Length: 120
Length: 130
Image (tube, rainbow over the protein chains, first blue to last red):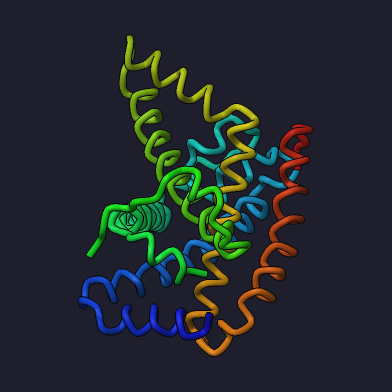
C-alpha cells in the first residue's frame, strides 16, 4: 500500500509541469472551496438568514453566494451583493470551480485502470 | 498514457478493491455528478431568466428536476462526500507518511461524513426552516 502511494507521488513529481501544477491547483482550490463554503454559511446566517432559510437555501448559499440563491426565502440580501467584493468573489469561485471540475473530468477521461489501484 | 480498459462488467463487479475502491469510486461519481449538476444549473438558470418559449420550458423542467427533494439530497451527498474525501487526500498527501493510516483516516472520514450528511438530509426531507 505505502509503496503504491509514494509511487503515485513520485509520478506526480516527475510528470509534466502541467500535471504537477493541476495536481497542486486541485488541492489548493479544494481547501479554498471548503473555507469559502464555511464563510458563506456564517455570513448568510449572520446577515439575516438565520430563522428564514430552509436547508436547501442554506446549501445554495454555501455553494454559491449570489442574490438569486435566496430570492425564494425570506432573506433581504440583494443590496449586499451589489458591491465589487461579492462580484469578484463570485467570479473567482465560479472560475476556480469550473477549472477544478473540468480538470477532474479530464483526469477521469485520461485515466488508466491501473491507476485505480493507486488511489486512496 | 492511457490504455483502453479491457474490463468486462462481471469482472468489474467481482473486483475486490474493498473500501478504498468504493471510496475512490464514490469520489469520482460525486465529482462527475457535481460537474453535471452545476453545468445544468448554469445553463438552466441562464435560459430561465433570459429566454421565453421552448427553451424557457426546458429550463423550467430542469429547474423543477434539480429543485426536487431527492435531487437536493443527492447533491448534498455528492458535495459533502467529495469535500470530505478530498480533504482526506489533501491531508494525507501533505504528510505522505500518514498514508500508512489510510484505513483509519477513512473511518474518521465516514464518522464525520455520516452525521454531517444524515442530519441535514433529514431536515431537508422534513422541510424544516432553520
